[in-house]
Image 1: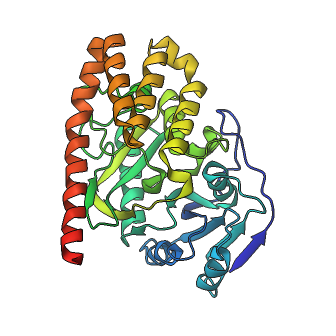
Image 2: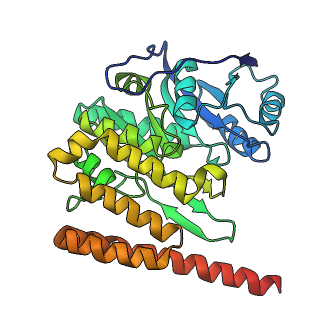
Image 3: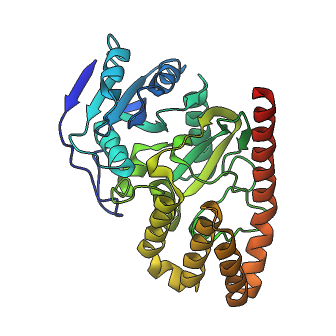
Length: 346
C-alpha cells in the first residue's frame, strides 16, 4: 500500500498535450475518483479487488475530502501492494482528479470506477477483450469502450444503461460530437446511454493523445473528453452485458444549476465547431431548456419551449419528439416507484 499526499499538477485537457506513456503491457489500472465518499467507497474498492484480470492495479485519487474518505481508503487498501492512494491538497474537481489517476497509472489500459458504484468481477476482462477484438477487426487504435449497466435510484427504481456502440452500428468520428452537443443521431447508429466515465475503459495512449481530461470542468468532463475523441476520429464501442450498477445520489455538485453551467461551458469550448455546423445557438438554447425542466420551472420551461420551436421548427420538433417520450416514461416510472414506496412506508 502506498499513500501520497501532495498537490499534483494535471494537464489542461487540450489535444496534443502528452501524458507519460504506460510502461507495463497487459496491465489494467482501475482508477477511482473519491470525494466525500466515506460511506460508499468500500463498494467501489471491493468490486475493483474482485476483478478477475491477472495484472491489475488500483489507484484511488481523493479530491481533498472532508469526511474522512482518505482514512477509509487507507484502511481498505492496507496489505494490498497493487493499490495506491493519491491525495489532493486542495479540491480540484473531477477532471483534474481523473488526470491525477492517469499520471499515476502504470497500466496499458485504464478503467474508471465511480466511488459509489459496483462493478461485476468480469468487467475489466470483458472490456479489454472488446477493445482488442475491435482493434484487430478494424485496424483502429483511437477508441473508447463503455460497459453497459443499470442506474439504481434511492426509491428502488432501476434504469438500464446500455453502452454506446454495444449494438450495431458503432458510432465514430464527428457525428458522435454532434450527438453529444446537440443530439443529432445518425440513422441505425446505437448511442445507448451516452459516454459516462464511470463505464469507460481505453488504452492509456488514447488518454495521452488527447491530453487527458479538462480540469476546468466541474461536471460533464466525460462529455468533453468524448467530444474531443470524436473530433479526432475516435470510435465508441461497448459491451452489451450489464457489468456495473450506478447508484444515483444527490450532492451539491449535482444540482441543475451546476450542471447547466458546465453544459454551457462545454458549448463555449466547442463553439467554433458548433458554428461550423450551424448549431451554436441551438445547442445553447437546448441546454437552457433542459435546465428549466430539471429545476422544476414549469411555466418558464413552457415559454422557452415555445420559443425554441419557433426558432428551430424542424430540428427542434424532431429533437423534442425524440427525447420527450423516453423522458416522460422515465419520470412516470420514478413517480410510480416513489408512490409505491410511500404506500409501503404507511
